[in-house]
Image (cartoon, rainbow over all chains, first blue to last red; front, side, top):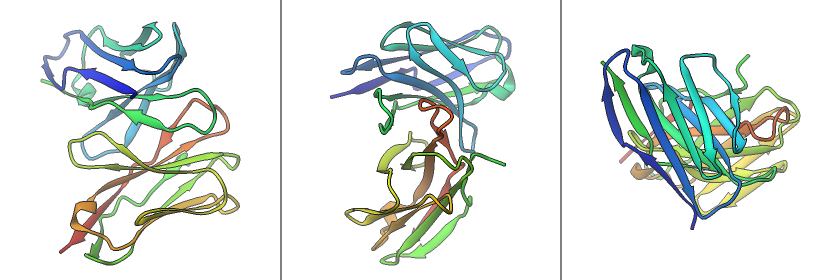
Length: 113
Length: 112
């Protein structure tokens, strides 16, 4: 089976602190990987997506960055968190191909204080 | 114009009724459409995908796609209180096969 691991499940960080969220995928090779953020009561905002190692597309200019050092690993980072970075961060994977579905990890709830 | 639009709701229906959830999209040549269900505090889970015009049925769920009208809907028959959740519509625009875009979701409340 194909599994997505995200950790931690919850995180409370002070403003100005760094951030590193990791997502790893099992059971599939060369997936498309995504980072989404969901603010409280809002929809899913696409932050980054990756079609391969080292290939990152950014959707929203902000103080976040993403990296894909390995085929099944996708990392979301920030050097200095803002209050507005609070939200529910979701990693998703899609298999290669046009008509393929996305599946989500369990998410990380980040609160910046 | 937003790429994917949904009425935020809440949509309230009694138990046993049909719930109808709607979604419009802006990219006329979009090819792939998905419905997800999200319970409060949880991650979205896939309900159905649809790629061709017409209806696609899976149990109590029916997805309907009309590409000419740029409209996709989800019908839930015999609604149950456990169906109460936010339903997210997602579209793969033709501008990039890899970029999956979501609507803001419609909150559904099914009362016993």
